[in-house]
Length: 197
Ligand SMILES: Nc1nc2c(ncn2[C@@H]2O[C@H](COP(=O)(O)OP(=O)(O)OP(=O)(O)O)[C@@H](O)[C@H]2O)c(=O)[nH]1
Ligand SMILES: [Mg+2]
Image 1 (spheres, helix red, strand yellow):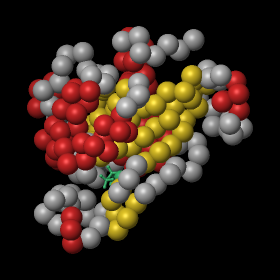
Image 2 (tube, protein in one colour; image 1 turned 30 degrees about the vertical axis):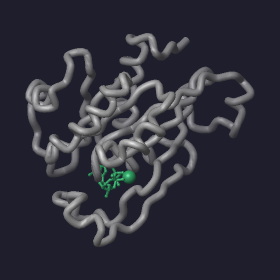
Image 3 (cartoon, helix red, strand yellow; image 1 turned 90 degrees about the vertical axis):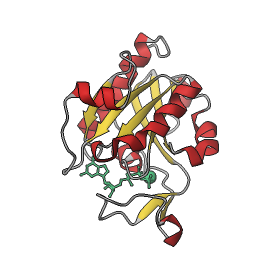
């Protein structure tokens, strides 16, 4: 990966442009993940949380969280001269089904984030990607107080298909986030969704 492509050159060179969705429940780290990896200032649509989210969005275990994404996260990552990824962070809760479907349209794949403190909150995101038939991988975003479980238990708890890759990451760390994304890209290659030359 290199981080200094001159803007818009990739459009002229005819690189493959791949849309990748970063999905997951409230507060799982979608905005952080996209921001960590984006080589351009990410588009962010953060707004302070209001009384309206009380009892809807679960703030347990998220003491510093005062904003939420009201639209989309968007970032860009150039893999090489042949492949540029556009990362879209999208809410994966059932109540955002419409936004989700619009965002995921035409995507090559999705990385579904999960948090072991609130694993079940990722069920809706997984159901949405499965419903759309979108190839996906799961990234367990490790927070400092996240309990650790064996991979097999996590896979079972999330009811993952044996072919769905799972990886643990720290969305704040560029190398770690890139590794998680690589797991998805490899999966897309084996599914022949993506061809990297
Ligand atoms: N320690 C740690 N903190 C993280 C990590 N990922 C996200 N955070 C923090 O967790 C909080 C929530 O992260 P966000 O990126 O806003 O999560 P989100 O999924 O975009 O949240 P919504 O858009 O509201 O659904 C922020 O305060 C982040 O700094 C991580 O991997 N490690
Ligand atoms: Mg967000």
